[in-house]
Length: 274
Image 1 (tube, rainbow, N blue to C red):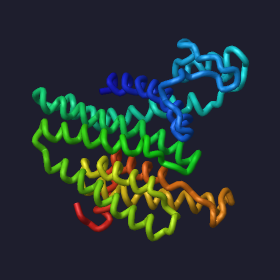
Image 2 (image 1 turned 135 degrees about the vertical axis):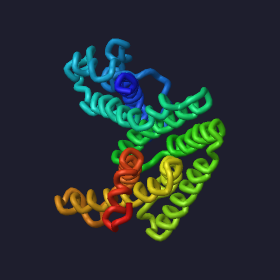
Image 3 (image 1 turned 180 degrees about the vertical axis):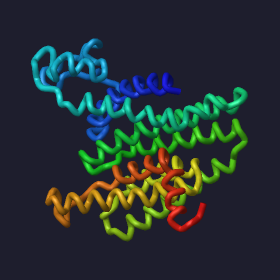
Image 4 (image 1 turned 30 degrees about the vertical axis):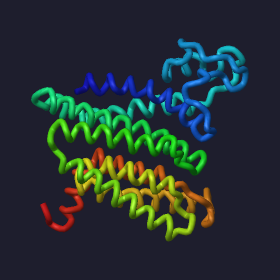
């Protein structure tokens, strides 16, 4: 598993390089595949040797090879963060692949691992976009729902675990309805992007069961509330300032995905329930 985690971590850094393109182009409604990446100052296409995650930025000392324009440190940080983020996902869901007996359970476990790696990559992109633009683009959110539905459905059909698929569907429906009510009640304080994202999160959490769904849902408001209080206390924002909620929804979801069982057990332990 360590070897697999390292390999997927390296793969994650490559995905992180693509996420930098997604984060820049999708809010501007540009294609993410054409034209190839180029220096925003001189327009020179980025060479293959200058497109190695993290290492190329270090080798170039954070500047364009042709015009010496500074390249934001955010690019290698996103690449590094994505690579590191893929490691715990692999360590949590990878063992199921190794422990599966027979081709069908093995393929099913691979599909689940792929679903959560995909969701991690999307989470990083959406977090950055929401922080930058206060939007959660349909071009990312809606395909994410579709991809998760396809991967989870295929996994459930291979193993016959339709109950898990039903829980995932219910999780998506419940969170979608809950956030829709919040969006209507808030009078514009919460956008429809958050509502659609809630459906994707509901799928990812519901697949893992009701405890994960509960922990992830509550954690979003806990994390969001703490961050908001810190920003207000530090006067980084005012009481009327808009604070994007998507990042905290995603952080709460990932706390539940990676640590949900421990958090749920600790919560029950407070009440003497094992």
